[in-house]
Image 1 (tube, rainbow, N blue to C red):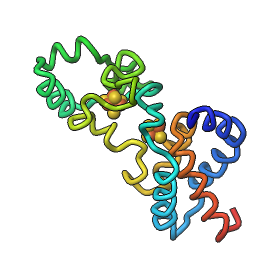
Image 2 (image 1 turned 45 degrees about the vertical axis):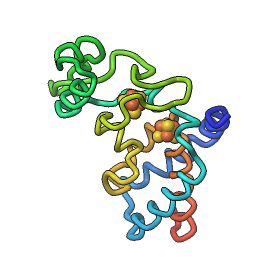
Image 3 (image 1 turned 135 degrees about the horizontal axis):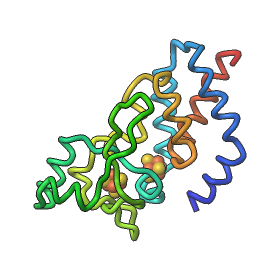
Amino acid sequence: MLLDKHKKNFKKNKKTYKKFLKKFDDKYVPEIAKFAAEAEKKAWAKVDCLDCGNCCKKMTPTFIDADIKRISKHLKMTEAAFKKKWIEREEPEPDGTQGDLINKSRPCQFLNLEDNKCSIYEVRPADCAEFPHFQKKTFEDQNETYMQNLKFCPATYEFVKKVKKLVEKEYDW
Ligand code: SF4
Ligand code: SF4
C-alpha cells in the first residue's frame, strides 16, 4: 500500500523533485538545517519503515571492516566465512579506486520479509544505521544521495517534498 502509493507519486513528480535538489549545487539556503529538521519530523510522522523495508529489498549497504568484524562475531562465524557467504566487492571506479564491499544479492539476507525487520538490527552495518542520511551531512552535500534514494525510499520522498515546500515559501527557486 505505502509502496504502491510511493511508486505512483515518484513517477508523477520525479523530474520536479530532482530539478529542485539539483539547484542546491549552485544555491545556498542559510536556514536549510532548520528546514531539514522540520521536514525530517514530518517524514517520520508519515512513514513507518516497518510498512516498507524497500531499502533492504532493493538496495545494498556497503560494509566496512568494523561492520564485518562485529556482525560475524554476532553470528559466531569467522570473518572469512561471512565474506564468502554473503558479500562481494564492486567493480573498481574508472579512476582505479577499489570498489565497496556489498551484498551479493537482494533482498538483504538479514531482512525478515514477513515483518520487514532486520534480524541483526543491533549490529547492522553503519551504512544501514545512517540510512536515509537525513543527518549525516549538510543537506546541500547530500542532494545527489537524495536524488538517488527518492525512487526507493518513501521517507526520502516525504522529506524532500517538505523541504521543497519550505524553501519555495521563502525563496524564488
Ligand atoms: S543489514 Fe538489516 S538494515 Fe541492513 S540492509 Fe540488511 S536487513 Fe536491512
Ligand atoms: S528508510 Fe526508506 S526505504 Fe528504508 S524502510 Fe524506511 S522508508 Fe523504506
